[in-house]
Picture 1 (cartoon, rainbow, N blue to C red):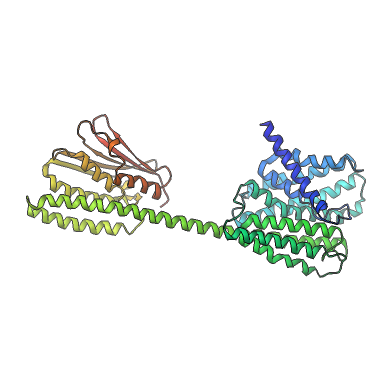
Picture 2 (cartoon, rainbow, N blue to C red):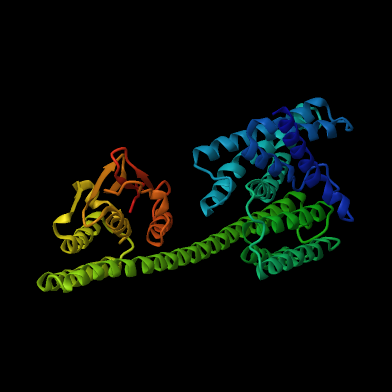
Length: 492
């Protein structure tokens, strides 16, 4: 446990250092101000607290303590400032938890909650707290607090917007890319997004039109549509780091006018780019999931139709066999049997049109089929079908029980004698159906429980019924063979 805790805190600390220091290593120009234009470490801290909770707070504090030891800032600053980030992240976690936030960002609602409840308020407060820490440490006068606080608030909010979603998505272990051609399209979009951002923001001097920054926006949309939410968030983070580092160095379209105007233009750009990219990416992911669900539903429907096609010939064959046995011995009974079979087939065709039917309709078909079998064996075969009102209203796949009853008749009648019983009750919200039959001495259900008809029952229950449903075969102490079908409670 302690080893895992240490690893988590180390990962968080290294991630904060990486996103804060890496841009200055990669880009040709560093910032010229002690005030950050963008601090993605706030987003890493927020994402880590949302994923792991309180236990990663040491990993958030550690990078600040390490950086403070080599500076002329007093300990009050490099200790109290990260404490504000930690407090803001914990506050955001509490607010998002109350709002029903899903950290997997599975819905548009979660993205809006993250941006509003989790980032805007808490991170702005953390920014003003950091500015106040400068006053407490004697590095800044009280009169500068509003302007510097606004700088830090914008830097923390912007950093959280672009970094926190990446942390959350990576922690949720969602698939990185949709696969196929879309993988290549999303990688191309990300590459062009980085290139365009570099060209636009690396332009030396000031005075270029701020609208030039939005040349990168179409590539964010492209990445979001082709690669989904994770591709959009990674692209936004990369573009934001490029834009913030060059803007801090006095380059790019937002480096004109006052520093405060420049940073607010940058934050507006990052806010529009990040929220738009995330929302479009979430929509693309939702469409992709819907297509997968539709494909899965089509496959399941085709499988169910195949299974039903297996059951119906068995059912018809058994009924015709019963009538055939009457043709030579009792012509009138055979005629009545054909009339019953016609009505029976009409009912079975009607119910087959629906994915689910009331159990009462299924039992009516079973009663008709057993009447036909009774004609064949006359007095030698007895049967009963019973169900209470609640059970008869329970919805089941059509022709689900028919193979079990046919199997009971096949194995339950010996030398023209036997009995078949069908009972159905609802217990604890689940439907329980027992199909019982007498059996000759030595009959073992293990020898026939995997026949074609009964295998189709198992498969149809697995495909069409809720989790927890199934069928079990057993031999009772009194020598009967029993098939017990359980169909779990459902909202159908």
